[in-house]
Length: 375
Image (cartoon, rainbow, N blue to C red; front, side, top):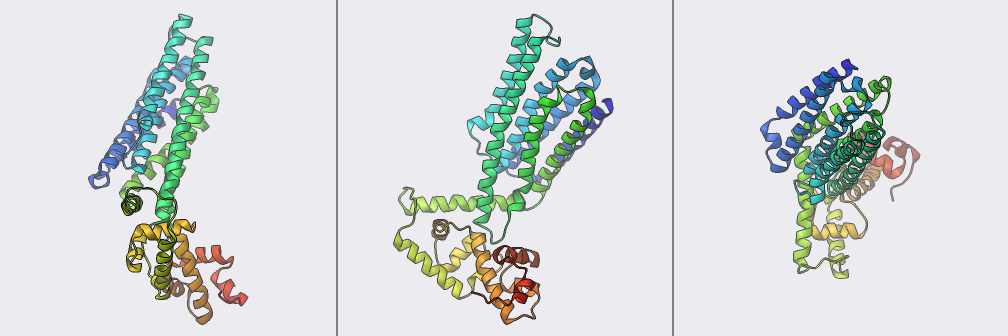
């Protein structure tokens, strides 16, 4: 067990250093800087927790001692990790519950543990039935807190995916893929820890390894996200959603509307049709604002038209491009998939093949061999 704890100390120290060594450009805005601070604080607390376990050997002293220490440290650690991701997702705009549920839960955990000590009139590190009940209650509080953050994180991920789908002309869900996995990891740790701290020592090693791998993935993916262009792309897509909402309200004198008027729908329909006829949809890298400008439409109107038909911008464009690809394959059977993809506006061959298969049920070669005619 001591080897596992020592490994945890080294790992948490190295991951903390990795976070601290992120270049300034990657955390230049307030939300990213605040997020990085929460990650560093969380890793420092983990380091302290593992160090105390290693030095004082609480696990060998008894279950209660290990449980006490784990609960006191893991509650704020989970809160800080969740908050770090929320700062990136919400660009720093968090509600009161997001900010303070963690400290509130931590305070309740401490209070429950202290109340049990008052009831049994024994040392806080003593083994008593009251302490065990207090630890179970505290573990439920901890898991409940993380379930709230799970809901918040998943809700935001869904919104981020929609923002990406309604801005870029290709599938960009991979930008937030690590967030989904990390959210599951954080929640898994929160749910595993209460179970782990009550298990016999011989069960701890596999659980500990799983936690180490999860934390390493989380921190490493977090750093990669900030170092890449993904964060900027995500912010760009979310800013587009804000501009669309602002323009929509401005156009309708501050009144929210559920659907477009028939006149606005016809205007958008005609502009879209003219744009398709002149091949506007075949331009690669066409973001929604650029497409709207090319159509001579306000971006909010194009976005509202797509939404009213239940379409996402990138899926809608992919459908138009696949239709063009079916025509090109029949007229130019000698063209390579790469040539067809570039002609139709797809950024690369693999994405073209993926979307073609999704839409037709065939690969481009199978479609050509089937002898089907484009509709």
